[in-house]
Image 1 (spheres, rainbow, N blue to C red):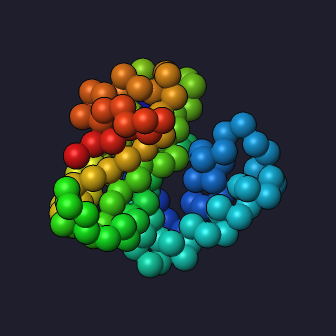
Image 2 (image 1 turned 90 degrees about the horizontal axis):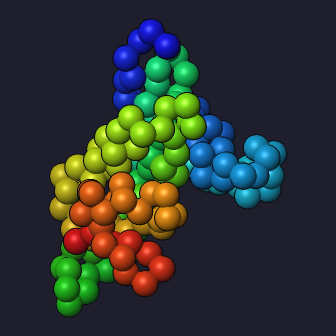
Image 3 (image 1 turned 120 degrees about the vertical axis):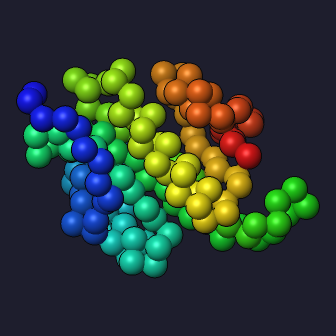
Length: 146
């Protein structure tokens, strides 16, 4: 590994790769992965899915996404949009180097730039410390950041 990691925005052509990040335990040809990959280009075109990928030496080694959900204003938040961090994945050989932290940070910065105050995600026990460091707190089975 000679080059430094670089972050780029995900493009519609990355749909298969992003679907593999979303369903790492399923074959790429699984129905769930294929349906998600088919949905992504349109969602990107409508601006409701934003993704970031980290590359090193031309290979994608990490990724994260932000899905924008039109939720409607609530008594706690007048902003009608919510964010959902999804598809956070790091290749095992590149874990514990801050890549996921950078990518989720990029998603949170984009949410903030859009005035979105409420962002949720699903967490595993392994990922919980990362998300807590970024300001997320447990909220039932989910984690939430306001």
